[in-house]
Image (cartoon, rainbow, N blue to C red; front, side, top):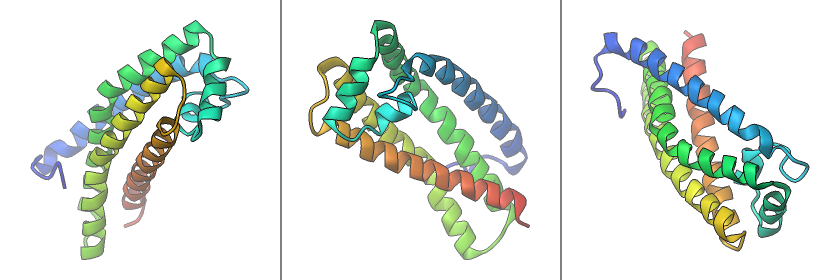
Length: 172
């Protein structure tokens, strides 16, 4: 696992630190996301990430005024600071869950998901670059499709890690 070198007694305090930072970043993103909720983008930035087609992405762009577009640009840039924070928090939670249960399959899955949290940041970065490109140039293939697939893989990896961590926490 990526954070195996962290001594066991330091893992939980570090988790709480990175979890707190993650919640702080989420609060900022929630604030930035408010002007992005339109009929074309009912879920705000998530709608934009998962638009999947030039038509849907362009409809979202058309529904946002200059202030909303500035929120998108700032949020996408700010996300690059957030990526190592959420990946570290999630990877630590997976490591803590793996420490609570033993077994080859459980351990192998934990290792994969621990690395998956950091792999998700790579997909997040490509997604953000695609979304910046759309924001600046309009939506043309393959950018909305690339953003969609990167976001889908990112969300799958992150949800897998969260489920693993919660399962490890609540199942003895």
